[in-house]
Length: 66
Image (tube, rainbow, N blue to C red; front, side):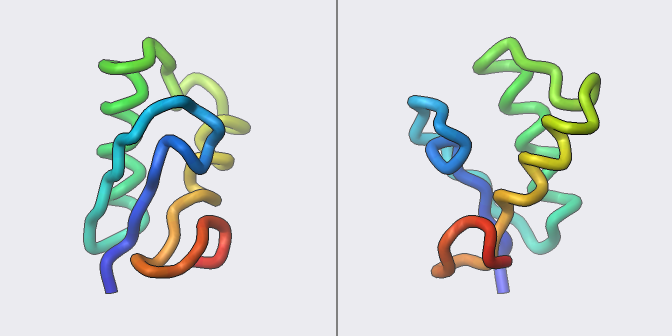
C-alpha cells in the first residue's frame, strides 16, 4: 500500500501530496519539498523530522494512523 504525506496535515497552507512505496521514500521527498517550496530544512531538527515522519500514513487512512 502506498504511503502518503500531505503538507496540510502539518498545518501548512499547501496542497502538496507526496506518495511513495515506503515511509523513507516519502520522507525524502517531503524533505526536498519543504526545502524548495517552504524554505524549511527538516533535517536540521530531529523534532521536525519526527513530526513529518509521524504524518506519513497509508493511502486512504487519516494522518497519524499509518
